[in-house]
Image (tube, rainbow, N blue to C red; front, side):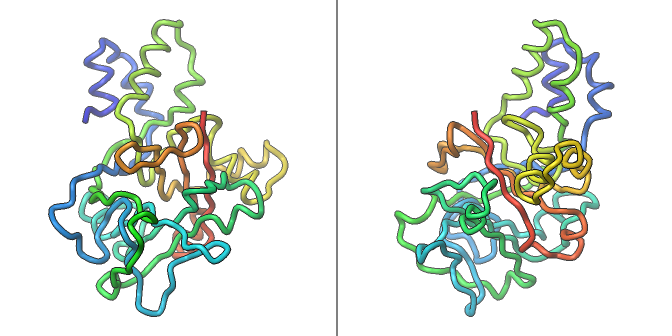
Length: 260
C-alpha cells in the first residue's frame, strides 16, 4: 500500500510533499490479514468472537449482546512503532450495535457501543457467540504511518484539476482503518463534532478549541470483507481525551459516525 507521499510522487505532485508534511501526526494503519488458523485469545483482530476475563459479561443493549468489531492487543502497537500515547500492553475491545447503528450524538446512543480495556490479555478467554452475531474474523496488523490531516488539505487553495487529483489520491486505499493520527473525515472535522455532540460543548467555536484535547483511539471504515456498511458508506470514530488516555480511562471514550 503506497503512502500519501509515494502517491504524490507517482502522480507528478511531489511539490506538495513539503507543505503537507507540516500537517501530519504519527499513527497506525490497521491492515486485515487472513487468520492462519485459530487466533489466540487476546490477539489483534477484526470481528470474530470476543475474548474476555471469566468474570466479565459481553456488553449488551436492551438485553441483546453488542457485536465485537475489533480487538487490539497494544503490545502489537508497541512493537510496530515509536513512542506513542497508548499503554505499552493490554487489550482494547470495541463493541457496537451493528444493527441499529447509533451515530453517537444523542444521549441514548451511549448504550449502543462500548470500549473495554484489559491489563492482562493472557487472562482472556474466548466466548461462545452465534455465528450470525459475529463479523467475519480477520487478523489485524499495525503499520506505522504519518497520517495526513485531510481537513487541512481540503482547506488549502488549489486549482480545480489539482484539487480533484489530490483528493482522489487521498481517498484511495480504502478501507481506512486506523489508530491514532488524524481522523479521515467523511464529513466535518471529527474532533469538534465529538466535543459538541458527545461532550456537550454547545458553542462550536469552543468545540473547535477543544479539538486539541482529543486523540483518535480507533477509526473503522465500512468494509465489504467484514460485511459492514456504516450508514451510507460511512466511518466510525472512537475518540478519547488525552488526560483520559493517560489515565487508562477508556470508559470515557466517545464515538461518532459520519457517512455520506
